[in-house]
Image (cartoon, rainbow, N blue to C red; front, side, top):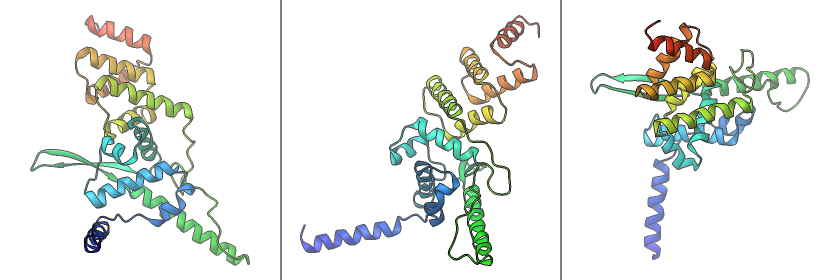
Length: 250
């Protein structure tokens, strides 16, 4: 290219960068470790914010996230699960009645709340140090975790729990024949974390749905609810209940 061509190309690139830039909270870049986030988790949050601001995509798929991060879908699903469980992000659902479409979007109010609480604590502690005659700034002593400031910290997820969840994701993806959506990952997480269903029971419900030819999450959830109402807690209970149900002796 000659000088004029290079100049034109450079101006075009500059224009593209200027009009395709995402606004990222500096506090996230500076303090993500204080919030107990890893570098990859912070980068995932940045990608989610960028998808929304630059591309207008409020609920990127795991495949879209895989393209920009270069990481496996199972790892991304695990990190999204952690971010949702610890309250950094949540998923809002809504319906477009005109087009009869249900859609989801990520909600970042939890992230902003944690950052705001951390910064407020930093200012408060700095003022306290000044009152005591100390100079300079100090980092907040209360690290954000689980429910954030003002609530008791939750215990960290053990490695075994993480591996168990990822194994569940992998098995579900294999049976469904496709990657799971973030909403489906959240459903599995809620079965484990909120409903306290054993992994064994979740997998048996998946097996029942495959056997019935109804491999979708609503059907699996109905199975788990039915078992919970009838105090079905393990494989032997499932076997007994299923035989009784199929013999018409409920």
